[in-house]
Structure formats: structure tokens, C-alpha cells
Length: 295
Image 1 (cartoon, helix red, strand yellow):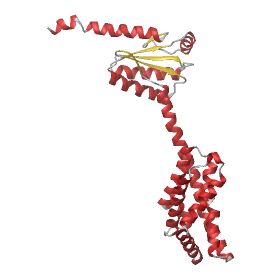
Image 2 (image 1 turned 180 degrees about the horizontal axis):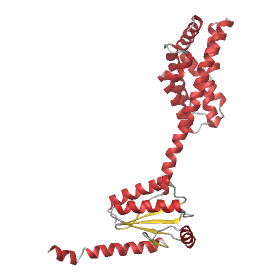
Image 3 (image 1 turned 135 degrees about the horizontal axis):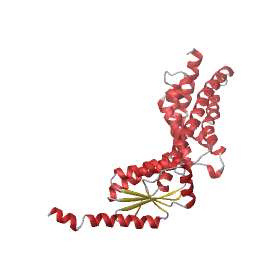
Image 4 (image 1 turned 120 degrees about the vertical axis):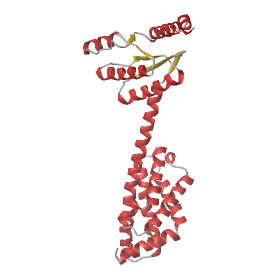
């Protein structure tokens, strides 16, 4: 690090230390001025975010890290920027607004520096340092925002899968899973996990998978159904598939898909009636004959 670079860093750190509260308020005002009135976060929240970033930035400048590594490697600053971006992502702020929130600190910081010195050479060196710092910080803010939005989308997708594949108890020891929409690998896993857990929790003996709401059944969907039926049987329960419409039956036949090992019914009502017969037959088999044998 050259002497001029060291002097500029020291001066920036002094400005941040001496004028931290003033810089925080100026930065918050600058951010609010860039946003439409309906999209403005609460001022106390912005103030807390700004204070955290400015304090961490001062700590980074006082560290031994080179300027081009402060944002990436000074953990308090990295965390403060990531927290700011993640909160904006959760609140639905635009990614451009999130990046500009960081970049607007440039003007605020340089204005404070100009109050301390009027030497053109020093101002130029300081502007270069501030640009390098806050351009990197703006990029990190944008990356953190994207990661935060992706995490939100992933969680929402999982929640939608759970909601779209409910397990319903139709009768004593009888469960049903009404499927609507496309059945892919991810959704099959959700269906299988939920159904197996419900079989264990409810001591179910028959599970009905209703595909009335599934638009098409191809070889992939059929394979997913076979996997689910196999897992249900390993749990000691019988599995029925209902909702086999004429069009689906023709498609299955034309594709040569073998569902002969699975009990199928055209409607959920037919499947429920069959499930009740299965339960009654099992209960009857464990009746007088079994008791007589036990004697």
C-alpha cells in the first residue's frame, strides 16, 4: 500500500468515525429521495441498516485488508450488505433499487470528504478509493438480493407443493391423495413422503391416489405412480389409483404402460367403495376364525 493510499484510507475512516450519525441520516434521506412514495421502507429500518453498513465500512478501512478485498473479506461489512439486500428481497424491492441504495452512499461520503479538504489531488484519490469500495459493495448487494429472491422462490415452491398434494383421511384406515396438475419427480417425492408419513400416523391400510386432475399420463408419470405404489405397499398398505378417464386409459394402452399390478378405478367414489371392501374383508378375516385358532 502506498503512502497516499494509506492516507486516503485513514482520512475516510476518520470521516466515518467523526460524522457517522450525520452520514447515516444523509444516506437514509438520499435513499428515500430515489424511491416512489409507496415503495419506501420505514425510516427506522433504513436508519438501522445504514448505521450497520457505515460502521462496518469504517471497520474495513481500519483493517489491514487491501481496498479491493475489504467488501469481500471483511466479514462484518459483507454481512451488513447481505442483510440489507436479503431484507429488501423479502420486502419485494426491485433489484435496481437495492443496488442503488448502496451506490447512493458514494455521493454522501464524498460530500462529507469535501468538507474536510479542498485539495484536488486528495479529492481525486479519495473518489477513486470510494468508487472501488462502493462499486464492489453494489455488486455484492445485487448478488445477495438475487440469492435471497431465489431462496424465497424455492421455499414458496416447496410450500405450494405441500399445499397442492394434501393427504385426506376419507374413512377409518383409508387415505386419499387428490393430484392436480403435472406429476414430476420433485412432486412425486413430496407426494410419497407425505403419504407414507400419513400412513404411519393414521395406521392406514388403504391409500387412494386420485389422478382425476392430472391432464395426461405418459411413461414418466406412470413410473412415478409405480414408485409411489411400491413404497405404499412396503408400508404394509394397499394402494388404489382412481380417476382413470377414457382418454387416459387409451393413452396408457397405446404407450404399452403396464399397470396390471395396480388396482385402478374410474372414480374416487368407486375407489372408496373398493377400499371399504378391503377393510371389511381384512376385519372379517381377523374375526371368529382367527379367534378360534388363538384358542
